[in-house]
Length: 233
View 1 (tube, one colour):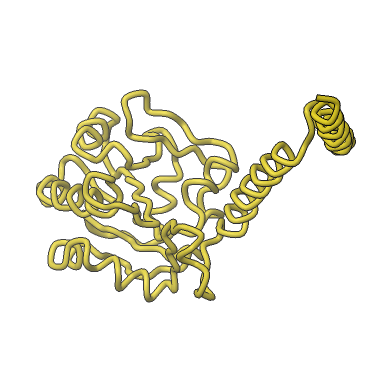
View 2 (cartoon, rainbow, N blue to C red):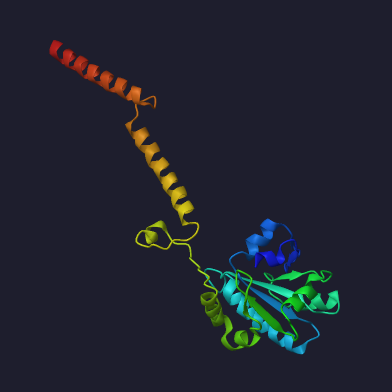
C-alpha cells in the first residue's frame, strides 16, 4: 500500500493543506492501514449525497470524539473533477483528516485506470499490502456504516492492540508492537528510581558508602565517649 504513494505528494485536508511528500511521512500515515480511495466529483449528485454518509463513517472510526482508539484507516480523495474549483468545493465538505491528491497531479487519472473506476462515487478498499479488498464499498458503507470495518479488518488480518498498562500484559502472550519498548522504558526508570532512593537511604552524610562506614565508627566512638563521661560522674 505504501508503495502505491511513494514518490507522490499527498495533501491533508486541513486549513493549511499540509503536504506529505517524504517517504517517512507517507509511511507514517499509510503503513499497516486499510486505505480507502474515494473517487468522486462535485458535479455528481450521488457523490454529494454520499459525502455526509462517508464523513459520518470516517468520524466514527477516526475521531477521538466518537472512539477511544482511532482505527488503522486512511481515506484518500481521488478527484475526478473537471476543475480545481470543483475539487475544492467537495473538499470543503469532507473531513479534515482526509488526504487528497492535488488537482494538477496526473496520478489521479492513473489510479482511476489502475482500479478500473467507471462510475462515481466509488470507494476502493485496499489491504495494507495493496491488494483490493473491495472494488466499491459505497453500498456497504451506506448499509452497515462503521460496522463494515470489522469485516475488512478480519479479511485483511489487521491486528490492532490498544495501549494497556504493564500489569495487564503479565498473563498475556499477545503484546502491542511498542510494549517491549514501553516495558523497558518504564522498568528502567522505576529501577533507577528505586536504586537511587535505596542508595540515598543507605549512604552516609556525604552521600557514599565509605562515609557510611565512617559515620558508623564515629557514632560508636561517640557512644563510648558518652559512657566514659557518665562513669566519671
